[in-house]
Image 1 (cartoon, rainbow, N blue to C red):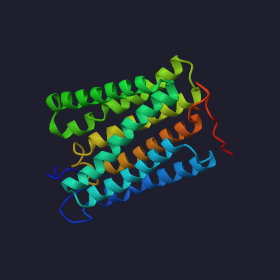
Image 2: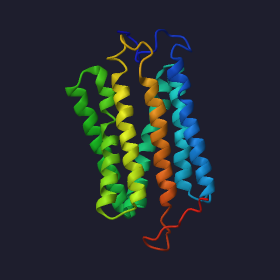
Image 3: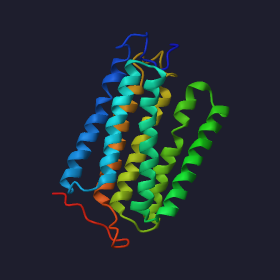
Length: 230
């Protein structure tokens, strides 16, 4: 078993994690695909544009971390992920569920607390190699919970299906992230690079759901502006 953070890394040189580094290009492709869809939908949805920029930042930050693991590159890797996750959750509460600003803020704060609780619980109950993956459990539950809420409240079934699919892909992705170290002796390449590819798919699906749903019109209550996708 290797002593480095990820199975693929066998030294301290720049390209000692080539697959983990190169597969971050999938995030840039996901951001580009979402941007093109955003343009086709009219190009006026600023929250989605900001989230798309965060997806690109995730790819860049993760690339930096997997080529030059340092405290600052770790921050460049982790911060955009956290910003996307909680920003998207807040947008989903407002756009998909129809909550007002106060309820959206409270709901997002509660979700943030829930995620911290799961991370702290994992730190005390799980072995070190599994703690990092357990910290993402809140996001998986959040995806499936949001899909369930949409179905129960009579929301867009298309949006619910896309988010549920994103949750399914994320579950598989999280499994590969968790197995990276335990299977290191069997799969020397590791499985973390599959986490990158599948997570890029998850983020694109989430952006697609937001674009297809469209933003709430400020002067029209719960009515939504329909994206002009052709």
